[in-house]
Length: 91
Image 1: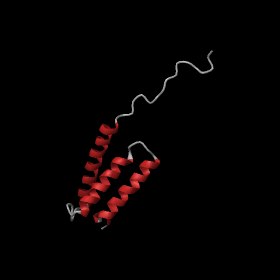
Image 2: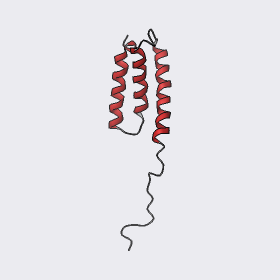
Image 3: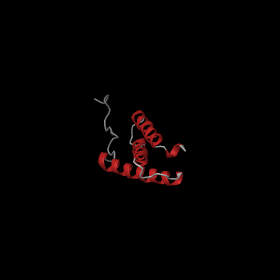
């Protein structure tokens, strides 16, 4: 089946990586990293004969770990809202 092919997972990860470039925010990047990791594990034979539920579980765990690592590395976006206490037209 298609989910047992390593290249399908890697290609899906690259598609998610492109989506991250188009809509930045570190949302799709964790999923992309999880998909590529599953593809690499399938490619090296570590997950040979894996069923779809098992592969999706590994994908979900890898994506969560990647997302947490990205949050720790890149940080939480705090203080991005600028509050103005005076107007430029106030003289």
